[in-house]
Length: 158
Ligand code: SME
Image (cartoon, rainbow, N blue to C red; front, side, top):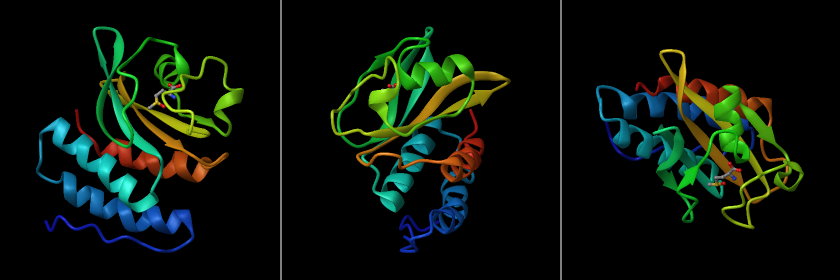
């Protein structure tokens, strides 16, 4: 497919996701390489939404290890239950954090990050990684993001 993304200028977040999801499907179609696919998903989300940081951590030897991302440099390794990412991994659940300063144990890779959403990635019923998105705005993420980002992570095959 063409590598150019069509960016929606709609102010409605659901509309932005609805425009983006088929493009992500097309980017992933027929490509078996995990790193390539994670890299393009992170880039597509960053390009559409301009969030501060979008990226993946992958479970390796019982730690989350930094994977493909878009944004400033970030913490490399996160333990089980540590920070928002480690908690989402441990609980196997999407976590929406409207104000990172209110989340006990939040790992501040950057002081500019104010709110965050983390979704676990599953393979054969196990959490194999997380998608982490950080915003420089408070309360950026809600159930709309949880729903559509949930659809996006299901498109990634491990
Ligand atoms: N804030 C995350 C750590 C990862 S960085 O934000 C990229 C956390 O608390 O898990």
